[in-house]
Image 1 (cartoon, protein in one colour):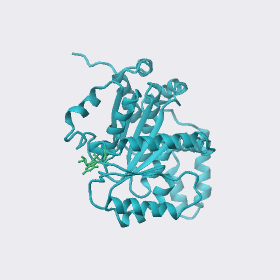
Image 2 (cartoon, rainbow, N blue to C red):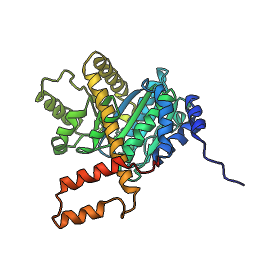
Image 3 (cartoon, rainbow, N blue to C red):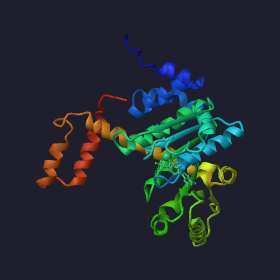
Length: 326
Ligand SMILES: Nc1nc2c(ncn2[C@@H]2O[C@H](COP(=O)(O)OP(=O)(O)OP(=O)(O)O)[C@@H](O)[C@H]2O)c(=O)[nH]1
Ligand SMILES: [Mg+2]
């Protein structure tokens, strides 16, 4: 049997516009590997910008996937099509999420109005962030009304989510204690909604109170992130999370913050692509021809300062573009 040839960009684009799950999956795989992305992006981008992109971030195992599935169900009940993109999950997407709820949750995996995809780290983190944005575009162009992006984050990592999502929920669990102090700078910046999941466990009150206190200490923000307690596997608090995300959307729609955030997302994406391109340009040249080794030697021998060498290399690389690969 001859292997089935990989679909071309035109087939992928047609499939995406038709909402064909198989083609959508293939397009996301292409985005992960970087193959043919510029052409695909050029053709689908005019159809993007309609989906509501929501971020769920928080420590490993906090219950983000379980919450995402329950939120997806809630949006489905409102007639919305939902895409879920889990970035670099430490546990498989189904892990635990279907426990005790096997039958009802299995419906969601066969529902054509729901698309679930995990994205794994391949190569650089920068590449993963790019592929995630591309996957969101693909789902957006395919007509998904809501796209939930799940990222694992502790400390500063989760800040990346603001490059993709309009509204971000930070999912925490009781008993983080000192961790909240440690990560507060990062999460305060990005949280539009706080979810204290695993509220069936001891300490949820204390965690919520600590978060509230933290918010009290940072007045002057025009949006105060609501704190919602959930028991995700049972769906408890999930309507309140959806409500909080929707309230934030309404607030954002009437705030100058919306334009600022959209520009920030576009800028992050553009700058990341430029960086990636520059790296590729460097890597696509042989070590003899990229000038790197020679420059390193010159710096080591103090014949050239690093700034001058960087300027010289930059000008050379941008003047003589290497063959475009992706
Ligand atoms: N007791 C309790 N367990 C929960 C709750 N929410 C999720 N879990 C369990 O916690 C485990 C992790 O849940 P996931 O939804 O996979 O967590 P996650 O944040 O997506 O995990 P990663 O993607 O690996 O970071 C699973 O065994 C869930 O069943 C909750 O509210 N209470
Ligand atoms: Mg997960």
